[in-house]
Image (cartoon, rainbow, N blue to C red; front, side, top):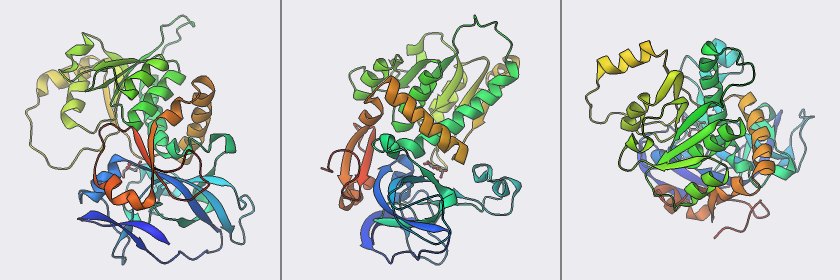
Length: 370
Ligand code: BGC
């Protein structure tokens, strides 16, 4: 089986042959159609993150996945050959109450694994084997955009967290209240999916990055009724505005701190970007910052990974995006490249792209890889 390998903590990416995984009872063999490349993959390729499975000298990279079932073991009545599926990423520790309740995204022991990231093989490979409890079936009508499902689930969970915090201060508005406002920091795939998901929920959305309005992201944002703002010269570009839900999807610690000042009264900042560990300590205006949080009932929440329910919500959202803004979700996929290009695609960040996808099997969705 051809697969994209890394050997953390060593930097570097190779494409090599690995043995196929055995088809154990309760599992299926899935032909990988395509896989998205994300910032986490770049960090693992750079040696900053990631861990190979115990006793294995390499990690098969990749967690944003889309595949088609090729073989079914005994004891899987609900899935059949030909089903298009997306697999979840995190596998629980089996010990903490959250993992035992099917919520490894809230694991408290830290002994979870994540396929393609930490301690378990990923999906940048011609095929993988998985138990069906970790698979979500994709309707054929969404196959062309479902490679975006996994990154969308990170946002689905983040929105649930933010709205749970906002619900503390909910009052009956009598139906006449203004729509809530959201600020999305970052216009990579996660930020763009956040803007779409929040627009679909009726938020007034402003999305920020450090580019002028001529980029593909800025145009797509305007097309869904969001405002794009270039904050290359600082958040002062936003004037005095504050937002009910601030969603950070950029992974920049200095930006995250600056966003605290943009949380409205009773509002919340949800952090999803994973910054590099270490870094230079920066001075923090402790008094002003904490005073603003307390006197304004403001909250800051971190959110990682997603639950199975977030995958189901994500599928419903993808369908909503397709019907409300046809073609917009697939426009987030800026290029499809063959698996053999993985060393250059994963080894370097392309600032002009929103989502680069590795196309693995022929006959997958979208135009051929170039
Ligand atoms: C993935 C999540 C994962 C997180 C932390 C993200 O890129 O989408 O599934 O939990 O990285 O490893």
